Image (cartoon, rainbow, N blue to C red):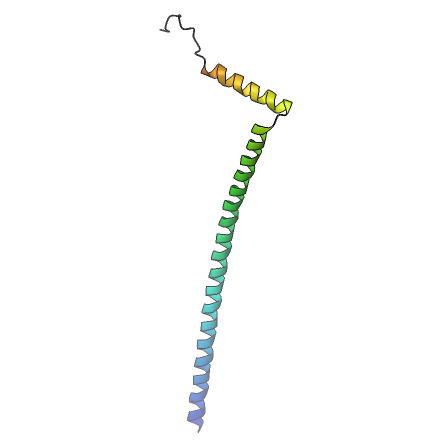
Amino acid sequence: MSKKDNLRKWMWLFLVVLAALQLYAVRELLAAFALFFLGFVAIALCVGSIYFLHKTWEAAVAWAAASQNPVLLAIRHGVSAVEDMARRPIRRPDSEPAR
């Protein structure tokens, strides 16, 4: 009877250790899943914020282009003048080429 009880004790000990190892593995897998989930959420937040900023900028530029505010009209006129100056050649057409 003593031998049978001893084997039963080792069997239960083995089963408890096996169950504990299974629980440890499950906890490790859940922890890895949580880390991956947090990583993907961080990436999604970055992409979403960049998309939101782009759409906001697009709406602001469209509003500024359609606006008839005198300040914005003056800024548009100034930008056009600078672009025209940038398109002009630096030297006059009849001047001699640089050596």
